[in-house]
Amino acid sequence: MAWFGFGSTKISLEELKKSIIESPDTFPQDLRKNLEKIEFVTGWELIKLTLPSLNKVKGRNLVRLLLGDKIHLLESLVEERTERLLAIECLGYLPSRETVEILVRLLSSKDESVQLAAAGALKHHTPRLVVPYLVDALLEGAALPSRVGEVLLVMGYYAEEALLEAFPRATPPVQAHILELLTHAVNPKCKDLVAEALKHDDFKLKNKALEAIASFSFTEFWPEVVMCLAEPQWTLRAKALEVLAKLEIKEARDFVEAFLHDEDEWVRECAQNYLKTIESVSTVTEEKSNVVNQLG
Image (cartoon, rainbow, N blue to C red; front, side, top):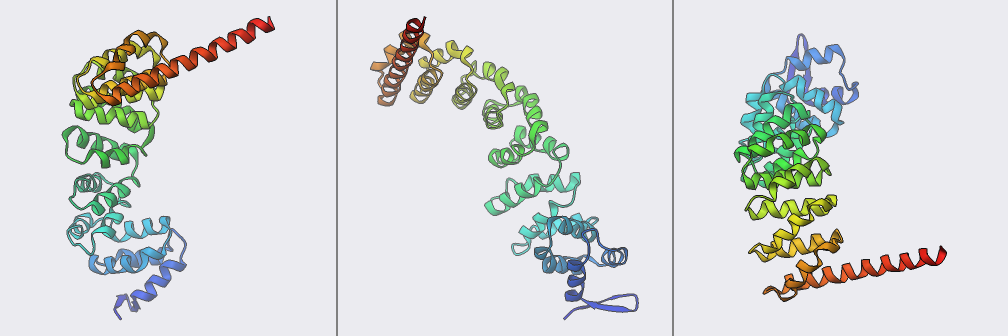
C-alpha cells in the first residue's frame, strides 16, 4: 500500500479516496490543500482509483484540483493505450483552449474509441470555447466531419450561427455537410443556403439541398427541384421526384410524366409514385369541395 505524507501525517491512497468520497462536492479547505500538493504520478493513480465512484461535479472538481496545471502531462497519457480513454475524459473537465485543441485533433484519430471519447469530452466544454475550433477543423478538413458534426449538433444556436456564417467559405463537400447539420438542427435559416446550393454542380451538395427542401417544405423552390430532373445522376432525378411528391407540387405534373419512361427503373417508379400522390390529393380536394357545396 502506498503512503503519502502531508506535514506530520501519513495517509494511504485508499484513505484519501474515502475522504474524497465522503466529502462535499466542493471539498473542505484542508482536503483541497492536501490534494493540491500531490504530484502528477500520484494524482493520476488517485484519479484512476477514485473517479469511477464520484458524481460528475465532484469528479470534475477533483480533476481540476489535481491536473488543472498539468495539461501537457495529461496529454502525454493519451499516447498510452491503457491510459488514453481516461486521460481524454479528464481533458473534458479542464476548460482551456489548449485542451480543446488537443481534443479536436483527437477527432481524427485512427482509433474510433479515441474519436468517440474526444467527441464526448468536447461536449463538456462551452460552445463559445469549442465551436470556433470545430468550424475551423471542418473548413480545413483537419478532423472527421462526422465527429465534428456530432459535437456541433449539441452546441445549439451558437454553433448553428457559426455554420451559417462559414458556409460561403467552405468547399462544396463541406457545404453539403453544413447543410445537412442545419437540417438536422431544424434551423430554417438554411433556406438561403439551399438557394445557393442548387446552383452548384456538386452531387452531394445538391442532394443535401433537396433533403432540406423536403424537410422544411420549402415549396417555393419547386421550379429548381424540377430542374434537377435533368441531372445525369439517376439518384438526383429520383430524389427530385420524391421531393415533388412529398410537397404535393401539382404544377410539376407535365414535367414528371416524361420520366415514366426514364432509363432507370427506380426513377420510373418515383415518377409513378408522384402521379399517384397528386391524383390522391386531387381526389381528396374534389371530395372536400363537393361536401362544402352540398352544405352550402
